Image (tube, rainbow, N blue to C red; front, side, top):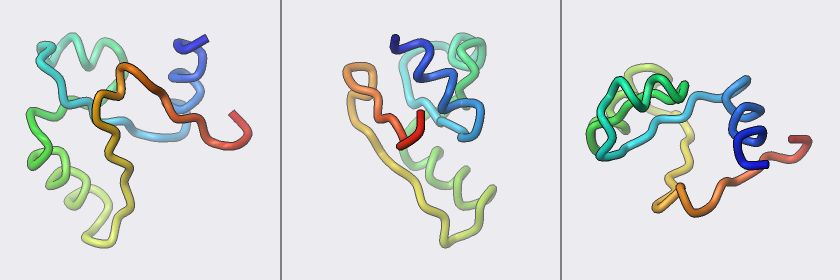
Length: 70
């Protein structure tokens, strides 16, 4: 189930969602809100340093990647 897979990922990872949804709605889903890709990447660099790694998944509502072991 997609909700279970998302919950498993969110236990260990932070997911920044760039969406037209209001910020409070995104945060109620336990995602970090990003207004746009530039803001999201700047947030990641501030939080994790310039050498961070991130995955960018366009149209992620249609797919959800699963890490091995999830």
